Structures are given as structure tokens and as C-alpha cells.
Amino acid sequence: MYTSLVSVEITEVKVFPVADNEQLKAFVRITLSDAFVIRDLKVIRNADGDFFVAMPTRKDKRGIHHDIAHPINPETRERIEKIILGAYFAFVNGS
Image 1: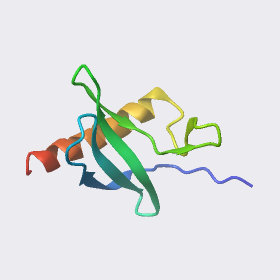
Image 2: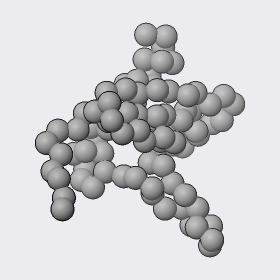
Image 3: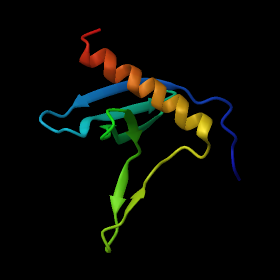
């Protein structure tokens, strides 16, 4: 039997900065509705200087990375990315 989750909110974002790496800027842990934790999200800066959030992955026997957890629609991805990048820039700027 499946139970529908009415509303899931990001209730905590913890930023762990990475020093001396041009692309990987931070690891991030988020807590959903004070009940579920997702670790190892990454703040990445691409070659164009744009920032994005990479979902946690694992590498299979062939060396291919697969998402462990990920949003299933673009709206959720955008919402998560906005919250995480906001927390990252606040952390970096000392806010």
C-alpha cells in the first residue's frame, strides 16, 4: 500500500565547501520535512561559470555513474537547485 505525501519541504540545508577545486565547489546535505536526509548533492561550477546542483550518484562496475536520488520533474529540480544554490551563496558570502 502506498501513502501519498501531501507536502515535502526542505527544512535544512547544510553546505560543506570544497577547497582548491575549479569545478566542485561544495557537498550539500538536505533534510526533507525534518524526516528524511539526502547526502552528497554537489554544487558544481561549469566551464561557462554557471552553477548547478548534481544529484548524489554511485558508480557501477563499468564505471558509469547513476543517480541515487533525483527529482522526477523539472519544477522540483528547479526548486531544489534554487534553495541549495541560495544556501551555498549565503554560506560563501558569510550571510
